[in-house]
Length: 303
Image (cartoon, rainbow, N blue to C red; front, side, top):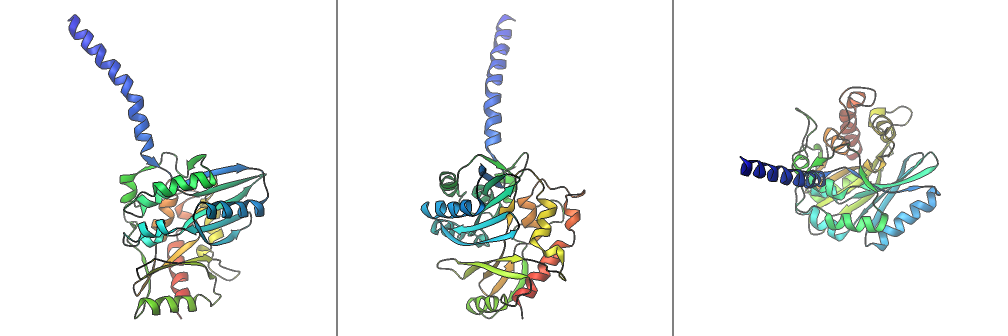
């Protein structure tokens, strides 16, 4: 009996010793959609210029930037390494455009960026973008991940959909089809000049493949459909202390002769995984948005 008690006591000590380690491993395996790089007082223009310079110094290519609404500035960037990884996965081109944001909240500026590791798993890439994550942490900073209370595991992200009946990563909007990739790119670029609320912001071509992404801003205007509007959507979902402006902008992809875009019910859900289905700040408030975005993008890329 004494030997049994000693054995049980030893097992108990071992379990208690290993539990914190197991918990830390489990926590480390969870990822959140955004990274807070920096926060504090400052001038918006100076900070935006500083972020761009830091990105370039770290080897990234800044391909575009825009102001989706007041006190928010989004910067889009890429690199040869990012493009190379994106090329290995169907629809991986959506990951070619990485995004950072500078947002004024009260008397402080928040600098944040989309978590490359989180999105690499969500977009089913062959690499986890850990090198990109490390480079961004050195270039811009890394205080904490945010955008989800618990975070999501790699396994959950790689098969992500919000709930039963909602879209997965490959369930894209089919916007148009042309005779060739070259014809598709030319048509999309021409049609995006129509000034109908969907405006081009940047273009990234995938080396060695017929894949191009074009980022677009979406503004409804006085007589437009507010449910396709960047600012309106963010007014519903971006209500936390730390701001998620780097969710924007939306991307259009020309892959081969097809023109596609990520379905809003996947794209928004994976960037805002804790968003509730019902309530004042919920998907229910944006119920018409998936159809409104699809219509706006189709109208924009077609004559």
